[in-house]
Image (cartoon, rainbow, N blue to C red; front, side, top):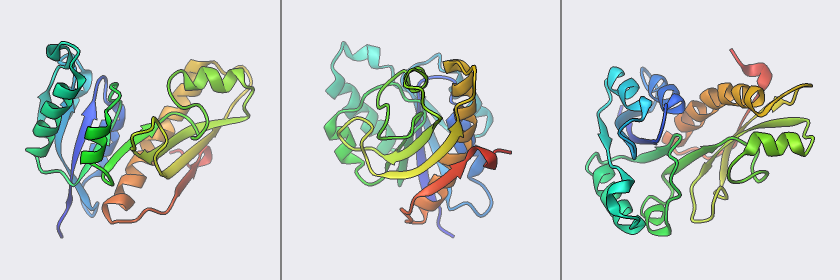
Length: 203
């Protein structure tokens, strides 16, 4: 069986990266080939290394604010690993249109809201402020517009009485760790039908 090659981009602890890497074994149609961070102090780098995945660091601060130059260097670094799929897993940089176009149709991201609601940051606080009854997360293809690419999967959790952004965020994150691997497995097989999970599916 030929496995899809997956590169993963992180900026911090990398919990979604770890969930993805741990899922890619056995009959899974993909394998991790590289984890890249834009921060040398990202905790996820050591976790990736411990899982046997090659790692690399490309610090955006070394490019003097030249985002285009950073992204060219990032593309060169990623392409050297010859990935079929690139997964953003807590990569805290907005990527420009040339980068997105370069990986069009094979660039995935997970966002902590039920898109199209609450694009951008502070999703859980915004959901609570709006008195939502449910929240969740979305895996989508990345396009040039922020958090607007085709939706590939969503997981829903109820908003509970007394929830704070932190408590809600923790429950959503637990579902992220289920949803992203499930979507990646199907995406690696060329399937684009929507994956749906509910909080009751948590284990």
